[in-house]
Length: 369
Image (cartoon, rainbow, N blue to C red; front, side, top):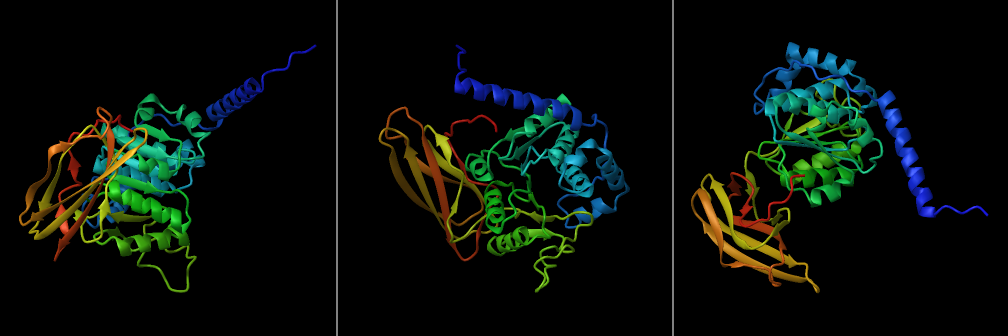
């Protein structure tokens, strides 16, 4: 009598065979170009003309030819001009972190990693829920490029919920439905560094376009590099000529130069802490008003415990300001860390401009994503 194989073992074996086939296919179909010097124009990325300056430079044509000849472009969903533009922006920005929402088969990811490798530092964090092919494709890259990437096989909501980095550059190319695109923009805006760049792909499509227009309406201080959003023509919801950055289907938005607060409460990413001693901010300009702070503290004991602590502080000058908790707030259950959800609101004639995001002391240092 033949012995029947365990169903779980059969499933494991099928998956192992499938992974082996995909790895072989990736080696044959998805090779990577070697690492070479790629020309790029040196520009002032904080100038309003930075994209035009890049496109007009002769080095940009050379970079475009490199990406056009690269094997990776055959698995890409953006143009060679887009990849060359991202490469030039990242070379000039020299970010510590860049984020890509929508990896697909890692063609644009590879271009971004080449820029950070050439810079000598930085990491591309790329997010894709349909993830089967990505690890096999990245395995074909030179080790130096693999060292510049972190891959997250999840959707953008899960990624942003646990994101602990502050990027200078975010490329949004995920789900193109209005609601999903708007969520990605709003979530990205919470973590991006002052004056950072948010690039939105497929702006000729109505979902990303109307999401970007809604985002800019609701987030004053953001500015567009170019005029793709202003180029919208009533009665033409499907307009392939909407993008104004030549050779791309992108819209590029620049974040405000300062972290801004007004009457509408603004939340910050949850942090895991061992105690809450103080919150530090640095005001700029000539602030006059009252800052309202709420901290929602959750200790995940059995049963879980939730606390709410509120403070108000009058701010009448620029420079460092501290919201102190004396004695420090500690978890209800001894030696058990808790999360802090921070909300801030400003009551003043003008918005409160901060040099950066608020910083809470005594945070647990989490592993870098």
